[in-house]
Length: 449
Image (cartoon, rainbow, N blue to C red; front, side, top):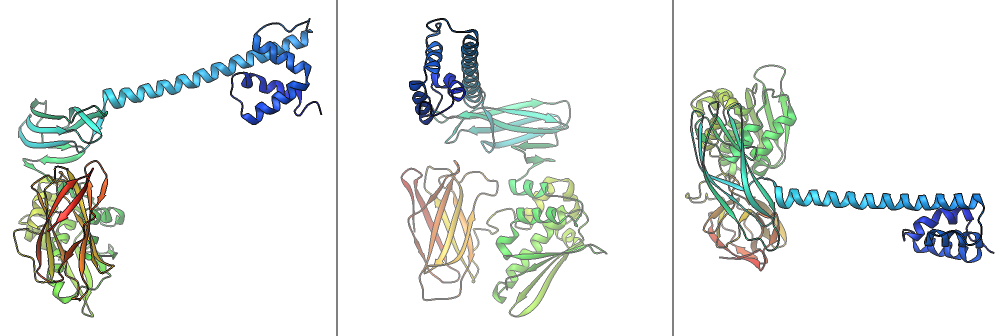
């Protein structure tokens, strides 16, 4: 059989075949066809050599060859345009990432802020990380709100770490009432504001019937970590407007006092940032009995010493209430006090040059997971050498099985590092231990007692 493919198909393949764009299978079909078809062989030869076909081709052949040459030229233009487009995109990407830079959130540490009317003095440091070199920072002002953002460019292998310290003064046309860093309020109405307070303040909303907004407040406060799973009920048809939280896990009687104290603290914050919320009620089981703890906005105001709803317009007051309610730390306890009888406490001292963003732990009895949790600085600054992070965990029921702790270290470059060491931990209420974290991300972290 002379032709495996029709001549029309063969001629359609020729421009791409000459430019090397066809597949091996297409090449084999075309070459087999051309080997047995004189007309197509002459056409392919003319397209390759850009010369006239030997002999005197008729007008139809000449027009066909001219069309195929134009088609081949068009293919080349399209290919060149595509390559040029990719190169332009890569060039623009490289200029943005390696020259201009981009906003770097969490790269600025502010040491001091002073505001006097429309004058702002600020001291701080912009620090590079494993991936970015900080090249400067920018500040903008709008309606008395000043926002700072660091700019950094991607680190290349030959770049050294850089720190940019700054001591800057700014004057604006209006008085300054708020200073933000990376979208978070860090100063408001005359005082510094913690990252946790800023996050809680940003969840404020007017209507308690907006359950997704309510849940956002609860998530920022990390209620689930303290009470386990719970269901929500809203009483919004008549005063007092109440948010009821139905806790699913039983609370042991020996933990009841501490849990009720936490319920009051969290209720104060929920009442502070939900405009028309009148009361918060926790419902739970304790030793087979269903109990409830209710907190009203009047209770919260009496605790705070002023109308708790003032927090709706002030991040500074939100921070003050968090501190007074002993919720201004992700650990939620004072590390200078001894552990309570029914808890286990351990501290993790940083004896490493790595910057740690978060520490995750898991407590096992034998092979069974008993508890897990984690810890970080409340303002989300890195844990540095010499720092100590404290953890309180509820003591499990007494058992003869050995308990041990396992850890994952989260560094500021976003990577997780599992620690090989297992720390044996005595199952004795009131236990207090200090652990030491050494090593680094490259060679591995170690934990010793």
